[in-house]
Image (tube, rainbow, N blue to C red):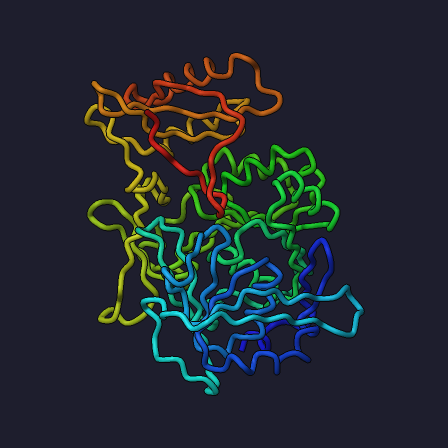
Length: 436
């Protein structure tokens, strides 16, 4: 049961109030009506945090619903019971916690749910269903257990208490990982309003002395562009979800020299695969032979990375991540997504390679390379660039000249657009769309 595993000193802080793990213990009986039920959780970061703690080990299954997922409950059949109301905590020190709960009418079960609903039966390991990002295929709900999700986390030692800023959707795998980090290690979770813009979130993190943040490389570039970010006393920086190139790693080293930088490679289907702490792009080639603490790795014939949980070889179930890798000496580098490959006149181009070249030009805050339809070539490359505040007016021309120096002709962007922002999804990943 997650509530019993959690560090009782852990706190969740919102702009309105705060609550500790210990505050939840008097309300364990509130979960009793949901023994053996399959439930769908939706709401704010604080609501999901509290319901997971109360219902793990009680409900048969918990589907955590992403905030940006439009649901027609009856048509989509997401779960037999829907639990959407928040647990509303009074400010610290108040003696009473208000719990307001509503249960929807019974609905058809989500495909993939296991045993039939058995009200009144206590479960020891609740099934958690977490929505995948869709990067390894169509988005789907992936089954986990609290035990497997908690495995990567160890208790806090001499590193001190961290104050984690939440920038991910708490219903996605990366968000769940940040939640569990705070819950299990006695840390503090800072949960801003989900409808706040990034600059306001960063300003609030500064006010709350946030010293640990996890975000995608794309989101980190936006964080660095926020003036208030210079005041963040960061001790821990975590990146994941996209390729970490040398430019963003160097920018973070310069911006936060006292911080420990960790790159996380994970997949919703298998959890955390490995962590890299040496500050370099990619990962050690040795891991292809020896594996990591969590998984075994191999490169498929089409150069995609495949992973499996460590275990007896006859029972291995390999997951193709769809990430193209290349070994150079004793290092393995990520080149891009197989699904994102662009054909330029018969030549294969991974947009991430071009983005890395463009991002190295002074004055580029962030960049997105996508395909643009061409009647003669099929596709051409188009680079969308967000400039830094100090960028010179000739940025597009400097990018063009730099690409001519470092990239073969077919990888050079034919079109360069200066824009104010790039499209990202709820996880902070860049969204590629073909231009016409």
